[in-house]
Length: 483
Ligand SMILES: *Cc1c(COP(=O)(O)O)cnc(C)c1O
Picture 1: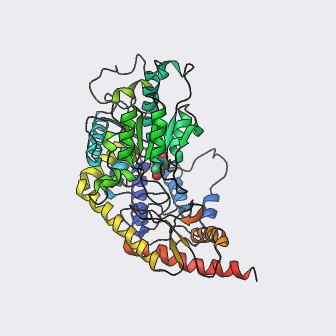
Picture 2: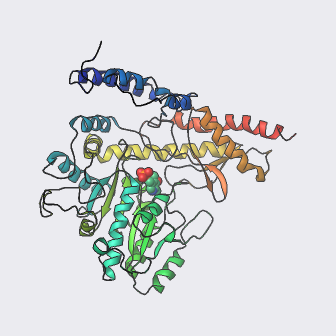
Picture 3: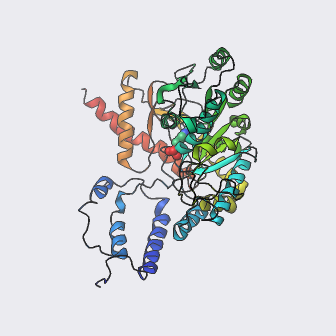
C-alpha cells in the first residue's frame, strides 16, 4: 500500500506496537533455551547498511526489516550470558521501561515531569534502604556505574577543592596541586575513566596492592594517609571486583579515611547487592561510613540499560557541579525533587519507572531471593569446577563470580595462557554460553558472573560442560599442531 506522507503517521502506531509486542514475546519465550550467540551474528549485523533513504518505507516495514536482522542480537539478557556481570530484565522493569518510552517524559524537573521525578525520589530512598545506607543521603539515577562514579567523584573533587579554599566548579583547578587518590589494584577502569573526565587524571590513582591479585595493602594506605597530615585526599574502595568478586576491606578503609580526613568513595557496581543478604552483608559492611557510594541498576537489579545510581552523603556537594542556571529553568529553591541539577544529564529519560516498578513488584524479599539463588549457583559452579580433573579454580568465591581456567594434565604451565585464550575465543564462537576471559594473578582465566534472575542450575552447568568439551577439542589441535 502506497504511503501518502513521507513522515510519521498516527495510524501506524497500533500495528507497530502489536508487531513489536508479538515479536518481543516470542523472543523472550525462547530466551531461556536459545543460543547466546548465533553463528551468523556478525554477518547479520554487517548486513545492515546502505545509504540514507530518500524516501522511507514506513514504520511497519522498517520494523519488519529490523526484525529480519535479529540473528545479530546476543542473548545477553538471557540466563546463559555470564560476561561483564550483566543482568537481565525483570518483567516489571520491562513493562515499566516500555511505558517510559510510550509516555516519553523528560525527567529533569518537577514542572516537566512530576510523576517520574517523584518516582525517582522514592526509588532513591528505597535503594538507600535496600543497601542499608542512611535515607538522608542524596542520590540520582545515572546511565550506569561509570556515570555514577563520575557523580560520586565529582562530589569528592568539590570537597577536595573547598578544603583548599578553591571552588573548582566555579573557578576550575586554579593552580591547585594534583589530588592524591588511593585505591587497591581492584580499582575498576570506570573509576579511572571518571577521574579522567573530572580532570583529576586517569593515571593519578596510586594503587596500593599487597599481592598479584591486587588486594589492598591496608598498612600502606595507613602510612600514606598519615603522611598527608590531614591534607585532603580521595580513597576509592571496590565493593566487588570483576575477576573473582572479591571486596576491599571497606569497613577498615572507612575508619582510616575518617581518622585521616580523606574522602571515601565506594564503587559497588554489583557488589553493593551483597548488603541485601545476611549471608554476604559482612562484605559491604562499612559503606554507611563512606562519603559516596554507587551501584549499577542494569546489573543485579535487573533493570534494562541504561541505569546506575549514585549516592552522596552530603547532597549539597553535588549541586554546584551539576547546576543548570537559566531564567527559563526552575529556581534552585523549588521544594520538589528535580534531577537535572543532580547529575551530568540535563534532559533525561525516565529510568525511574523501571527502578520503581521492579522494587514495587518484588520488594526486598524478592531481591534477597534472587541474590541468594545466585550465591548458591556460584557455589554449585565452584564445586563442579573443583570436581573436574581438567579445570582449576583460581580464587575463592565470596559472591557471584567464579574465576577458573582450563587445565588438562598433559599441557605444561607455560602453554596454559595460550590454550585458555583459544578456549575463550572458541566458547564465544560456539555460542551456547558466553563468559569472558581475563588475566588473574598473571594467568589467563575465565570469570563467569551470575547476575541474571533467569539463570538456573542447568545454565550454570553448561559453563563447565561447554568449557570441557571445547577445551578438549582446542587442546587436542594445539598439541597435534606441535607434533
Ligand atoms: C560494570 C562496572 C562498572 C561500570 O559500569 P557501567 O554500568 O558499564 O558504566 C564500574 N565498576 C564496577 C565494579 C563494575 O563492575
